[in-house]
Image 1 (spheres, rainbow, N blue to C red):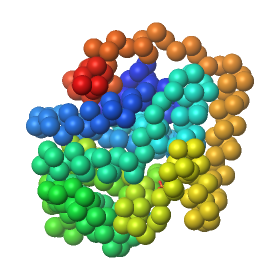
Image 2 (spheres, rainbow, N blue to C red):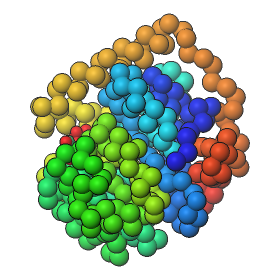
Image 3 (cartoon, rainbow, N blue to C red):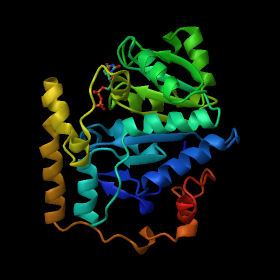
Length: 292
Ligand code: UDP
């Protein structure tokens, strides 16, 4: 896996958030899924929300994982607010749920198989059936709901291990931070994997067991409030939201924000995440192409 270059990202409490638009993101997904180079590292995507950013402060190993991923998108409204507040830049939100649907569509188009890992028993199967119906030709390599997020890869049924190793795309729904920890621990075993992403409760939404917030809530950035209303047990983790906001406000107030280097305005023709060229992977390409 390749790491992100801090200069091309917006650091939020130490987590580098990618400036890519939705179009940019799905162009890189397309490119990675089309690329047959077996040496190329998988695209490891983390959709970051404020709870994840706070968790990264108190959990060093998780922080390392967030620094090792390929792309950290702004999932929660809190992250795009923080980028706006600290850097005066607007970035598009790219959520796990949107990604799941779109990546399945791309995978079906490119004949790349997918694996659905996580969620309560029966949920991922239901989600897989719905997604196959929506994307005819989608090849589902397998589905598995582990007893616990910590379940060792070697304890999975042999068929599941093999299916995971065959899949081009692996969706992991164990909730944060478990899903990212699972990915980090096991990614090197998934030899055919081209893209892996933690998608939180997205299987539940697709399967219809949880209702996603109506569009008006999502557009106004109040999806978290709707989820709290639907799942009151989330109140404890929601306490992190004011903590996150307070941190951002204090950071801004303390005037420690370093001016963004000019290089953030990368020339359109040379827009890549991995400027170090460490793994030789060009994730994002020509933005002008995207428009075409
Ligand atoms: N989940 C799981 N095992 C666990 C905890 C959670 O499989 O021990 C699943 C849960 O069933 C759900 C998904 O992880 O499908 C995401 O959970 P959560 O709502 O916490 O994540 P979020 O969407 O807030 O990131």
